[in-house]
Image (cartoon, helix red, strand yellow):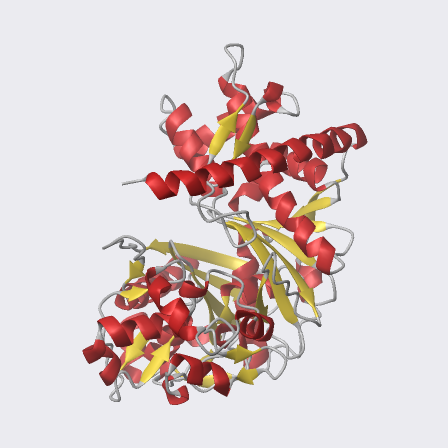
Length: 508
């Protein structure tokens, strides 16, 4: 039987999406399996690696069953995985913790002074490009483990990322790729390898981190035990895969200098591909190694986008319980209000401020509400607020590097035509939406799989897979109006951040 199909797994924060692709990169079918996130203490955010594995297995069975594809047709599989995760294995490959800290876990705050005792932050950041809060990175999480879970740390033989753990379950191979390694907090972006002095600063042995292999290399084959559990054929090749930001950049046509995209999900970021990491000590963009050596994915982010819009939905449209219908209604309401939402501004920082924003204590807020305002105004303001927050981060990228003449919108929020119009006007640049939509990370992983098994030779065909569904130029009068509004938004955000800092000091 001809092996001409690929499976891409997008291991996200909310769940696992398994997608079936043909040899030309066309998506044939997909399924999604949700898993739980746990918050056992303040600043703790954990997931269960075996939930990821159960999700992969169940999703694979469903994908093959619903698509009618036979396991024998699968030429290769690859994963995109959420970053900065710390999964400990002992010398026998046994999982040492039922629940592990994921990317947004910030428990390691107290380890920061120790790490930077004899290491300058400037040296570390400019070398690694790790611009998110320091305590999020894997090396700091291991320092926390050494102090608070010494028995686990002493047994830890290797530490793995999210997609690397699934690769291990599939093949028995322990390794990672450059993109995921670049989020460990110990990777030299220019040398494309681990940096010894960062292990020394953390007093963590280098050997605890896995071997680095190319993202599009075959790292092993599905074992008999894994095949029985997940439904793939024994011997199916498994590519090394990449971190989610890198897979999404690859799938979003990020092949050339200056190509950018905006990911519009629960959180949101803007990423640009370049041959030089974009780093700046003041604004701290975060950088991952690209799937191709010598290229980088540099990004800026906000922590709340779709999740803030969902909060608005849950509070303002409780009379519309159906999720899909409710978002359609919200789009209609937003379109009924004018640019500027009749004087209302919205700051979407309901999950706090990112490294590119004035303070982690920045919180969400509405401003300018009067007795004459309507629900339509509030909903449009919430859309405009997300776009304005992202525009401020876009300005950070634009101050450091060139961005090509258009912005690709990816993710669930890009489905809204009114929101796309808002983005074009607030970004003041052309905005496009393509058929890839929410599948950019999956397409990126599928492309890695296709190259690993020899079905593809490079990534030049990815742009042709994108079919433009909407192309919006900014409306000059709207763009000019929003430029003035952005000045007010920025001043207001700075004030909110200062007040958030004061509130944090007196909060019980």
